[in-house]
Image 1 (tube, rainbow, N blue to C red):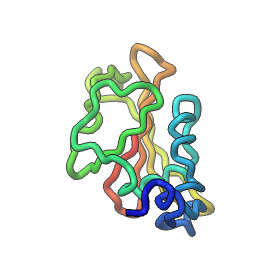
Image 2 (image 1 turned 180 degrees about the vertical axis):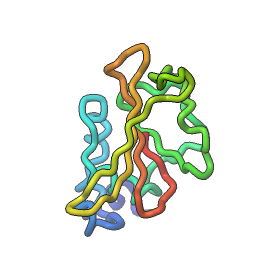
Image 3 (image 1 turned 90 degrees about the horizontal axis):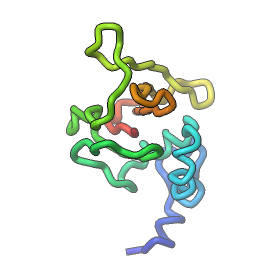
Image 4 (image 1 turned 30 degrees about the horizontal axis):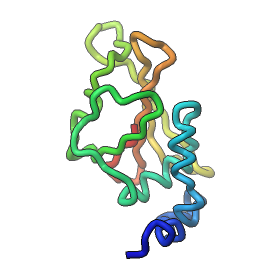
Length: 141
């Protein structure tokens, strides 16, 4: 086993797309610290999702994750990952969560799908869910 120092130097998959050569280049600990105050850049999201085996993938939804929490799910396994206990703003029908969907580009190519939901009780509280457009099933919330 290479240990933490060896892991830092291990190459990341698909670095030709996201630009981070090693885990140390990605600096995930710094990203986690910044998650409460800024949204991830598309290449950061891509690097995390393309290298999901380095992170904990949850088998069930987290109840009321705190602002800035980074939670990975496999959408095929955890189909109800959106049921997180928070009260999200609803559409006019009063039942469906109002979500904005977008595709994010890395370079000139759309690579990441994202949707945003706004908190009902706190309009400054957002849920952002990402997944790669190249058919991986993992979701980052």
